[in-house]
Image 1 (cartoon, helix red, strand yellow):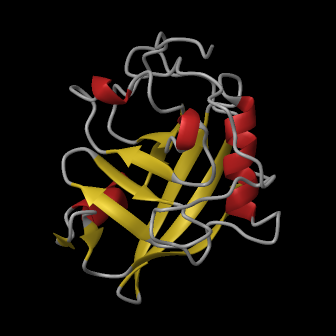
Image 2 (cartoon, rainbow, N blue to C red):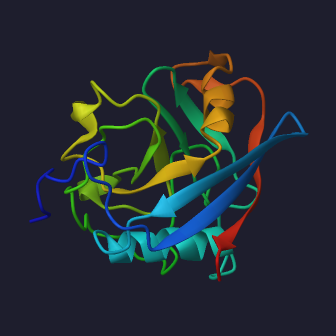
Amino acid sequence: DPAPPSIDPAVSEPPITGRCFLDFSIDGSPAGRVVVSLYGTVAPATCANFAALARGASGYGYAGTSVYRVVQGLTVQMGDVVRDDGTAGKSATGQPLPPETYAVMHSLPGVVSMVAGPGGAADSRFLVATRGEGSGYLDGRYVAFGRVTEGMDVVRRIEALPTSGTRNRPRARCVIEAAGVLDE
């Protein structure tokens, strides 16, 4: 079974082993860059999957996909490389990624986690927590593997967008225009 929540990044952040970038647009206008720092010593397979999808290493990845759900005060969700609507995803290997660890707590705004699919498995979909304190409901359910270390203002802009429907899709088209790995 995956390790229970025990690492509080608000108290002692895990080592950062790599950094990925996501460049966003809102309704076609550049909105800025978000940098996700990866906790590769805690969640190596999850971080490798995220970096491969950022890089587009499998012939598909995050570039061109949309933010598909915004729950104001909770999360911003994106990364559906299959249908781009939050109903599917695909890991870099094409196989579901079993939950690796639940060790990292969602104690800070900007903690990044994989969205849990059937049986708790991850694919490409991920979320950015937008609040810290009071986010314990995410602990033990979602594999946290990094944190937004630059561009949280961009995440906040996206979080503030009006949404529609029962799935809270942003009314404005919010797209990851480019993605990749920094420091390579």
